[in-house]
Amino acid sequence: MRAALRYGAITLTIFLFLLSIRRSGERVGRLEERFETTEKANEIQRRMLESAARRPRNRGELVDRLRDGEF
Image (cartoon, rainbow, N blue to C red):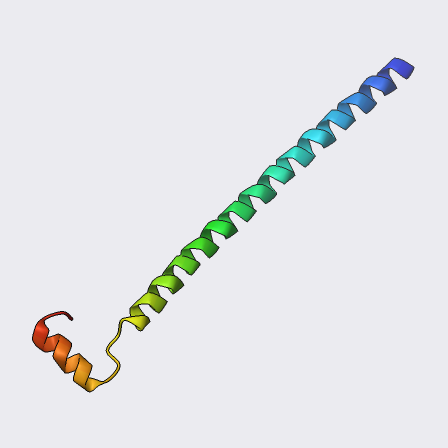
């Protein structure tokens, strides 16, 4: 009887350990996905800021760019 209880406890311990590893893996996967999404959003925002920095400041600059064919 004691041997059966001992094996049952060992089996339960191993099962709970494997379950915790699985949950940790899922958590890491979600964090990785969130990190990738944040990186993409940051890249898009950086590109938008760079574009805004290069925009014409007034109509005169816009006309000059259009005449030069730079736009």
